[in-house]
Length: 67
Image (cartoon, rainbow, N blue to C red; front, side, top):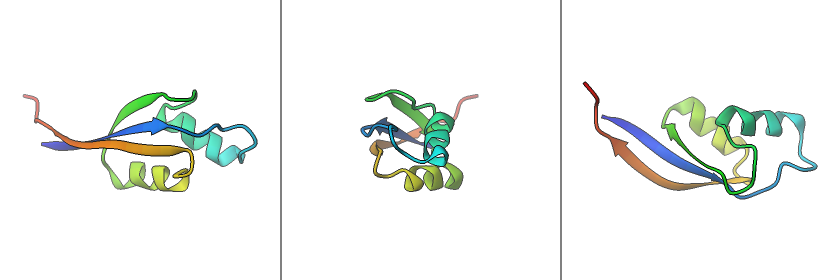
């Protein structure tokens, strides 16, 4: 089983640093109120932590292993 987090963009990237905008694009979030399901890895968690003022973790869930 793999863990999945649901991330929602709640803040605007306007007047933010270029690095923060790049992190948003890397997560697949580029417009307000977009929601993405992402694999729960240390790198994804680090990206979310860097832009925690613009995103929120809506849900954490476990995804059953596929065969």
